[in-house]
Amino acid sequence: MATSARRTPASRARTTIPQVSWRTPQPAPIVLISGPEEICAERATAGIRDYLRAEDPSLEVTDVRADDYVAGTLLGVTSPSLFGEPRLVRVTGVEKCSDAFLSEAVSYLAMPQEGATVVLRHTGATVRGKKLLDAIRAGEGGGVEIACPAVKRDSDRFDFAAGEFSAARKRIAPAALRTLVSAFADDLTELAAACQQLISDVPGDVTEQVVERYYGGRVETSAFAVADTAIAGRYGEALISLRHALASGADPVPLVAAIASKLRTMARVAGTRESSVALAARLGLKDWQVDRARRDLSGWSDATLGMAIQAAARADAEVKGGSRDSVFALERLITVIATKAPFGS
Image 1: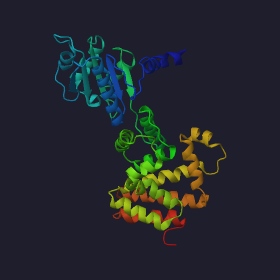
Image 2: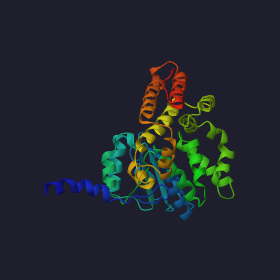
Image 3: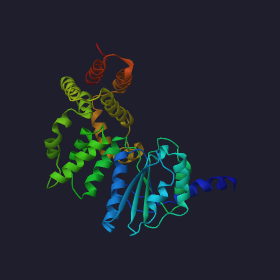
């Protein structure tokens, strides 16, 4: 009984407020946009604005900074005007809000202004404003929450890109989608822009040939292209790809991270007999990632894979400041992976 009593408040705070996708945002008196992924938060905010403006073109839009807040501003910009136009108030920096804003925002929840939509952006970078967030999530103010969690894993980026085309009712071949995601693995904003360019420019289905025509140079020098050629044992090609990537401005840190990520996936998949679907679900991967890792394992042993992972860990430390020559660290890593032998042997 005591355990139930302790869990009830937290459970209520989590489940009372409706959760809305950033792809299909809906206005409410209070809209909390939480999480660090800025591109998703920007889409959600723009979606709410477009929704309200479509209902009434006379929509008044006001931007407020919670960290540089003047007392009385929130009530002033949400109060009805003489002509009663709808109001949209976009508040940024809630994760670093002032005491004045926090106090007034919590009070505002008790009596939101009719015709006003207040969008609160909290990146989650700090716990500042927790009292306000807890109140909103408990249902005060009649709000909704739009979560924008970080997109970090390959599978998350794949889902993001697939969602871009699905939302636009545009078909893209699976191989084309994989190529596109690999080409923009280091920057979600660039990936989103690339998806939108293909959606707007390509009249029919998006094929792998189309992606290569648009972003061929980027694909050829992407971190994953470097990793793929090295893992396949194509030593000379891997070094050329690495030099092209560096010449085009690629940062050594994400290059090593991409290579290490593929090696770790290979290690997680090695020796398993589960179906691709079951293994992907258990590991948080996509079916094609499991299939690709299994193909990559051809010619690898536990010993050589372990040696490559250790080399990747060493290179990671060196490109993050542990060595004066990050390019040499990368070339040594590529050598170990492509030759499946200790460096200099």
